[in-house]
Length: 172
Image (cartoon, rainbow, N blue to C red; front, side, top):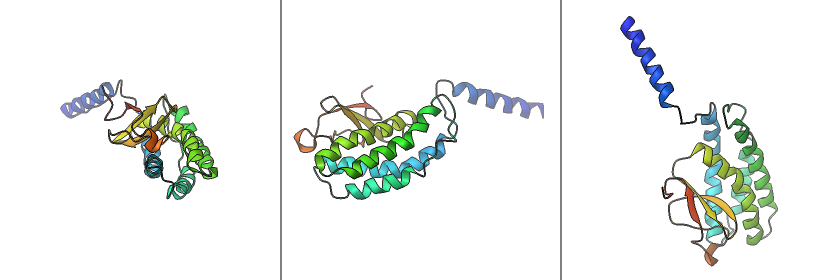
């Protein structure tokens, strides 16, 4: 019995020590789970704009608007909880601006506002396979999968303009 207690105490101490320097935000798992479908729609938008196309963008924006209401940051606690609390409203506001856009140029301008809360979430939660790209010419950041830059702000005019600043393909 004493040996079992010692093993349990040692295991808990190891977990506590090993998590130092690796911020864990209590409740962020459920938040992140709700963000996955928003991320999927966001990636569709960025890809369409990078391809100089707008078909499907309005539908993706509408889905993001609908999904943003289901994301609750109330369960997230810890050092960055206040940042998580701003994300759903920022996504909703950004999606509303995109919904009002009338052409590809205004969609690209509005994407900057939608990207800000998405990038903030990505920087804290680090979803698998997602890179944050920064374009100093726009200036603005966006999210994408893969190392091949596909700039949604300029499309074919400057498709490869940007630098991976964080994510699995960032230069370390």
